[in-house]
Length: 346
Ligand code: LMR
Image (cartoon, rainbow, N blue to C red; front, side, top):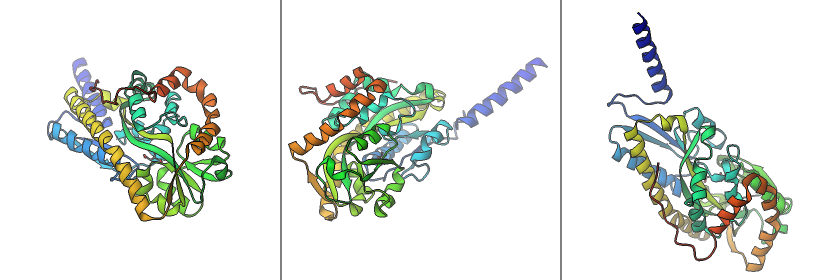
């Protein structure tokens, strides 16, 4: 009798666990993995997501089915983290600016002018400190599998501008980042946190005057059609962390986890190979469209932006930590080895 009850209990627990985390032991039923993101398909993240699907399904034939949802179709910025924690989606890749609710350390990526270029950001992401950040949200239920690069960010507005004082009083759409709120304040502008999917309309209707993003995002969302000037400030990096629900990930069968880990490593290499090219193409396409004017800064103008934003470092140093800031800054120092993808360890 006792044995029967135990068996029944085991069966109930098994069904509950497998249905909760979306996989079953049956060889016939592939595990459905939803990968949701907010950008267009023709962007580094859009292409890397499709590459991950292709690789994962090739490595694990019949065992997994990866469904990719671009353009905030499944979940937008406001919902995707919660959806991941509820296991309504299994993989998301938010911008590094969108994690500050889960770890303050990750704010290091948003500090103004911390990386001289996208390669420096990649070097930091692959450093000991960068890899540690992937694991820094495990206690909140999130595991970072890797970083996907996009590119450098630039300011754009519906007026001609060159210097910080030219955007005084203007409203800029920013991502959900306290650092970016402080950055806008440092130049006398107002940062308005807003989901990515709402930005085009907000620019078009004048709800905000400007925004800041990579060329790839500006072009694929047509922001250049509703902006007058894009100032090539290179003030920050727009990169992503690919994150999974920790419980779901840790509960996957070993062979599935291995195949997905390999697929992610290869998709990451692919992403980082195409990111620069996608941004260069987008920049050229914006120029060819002849709507927003792309303006390069002189060294003296750039120095003004850096000076105005410098106080942001002091403000966030207590939350981020001076050592982590130093480690990130070191990635831009001369004589660094070329950025390389390390072998994936999981
Ligand atoms: C944004 O919200 O501006 C970007 O982070 C969107 C993205 O994922 O690139």
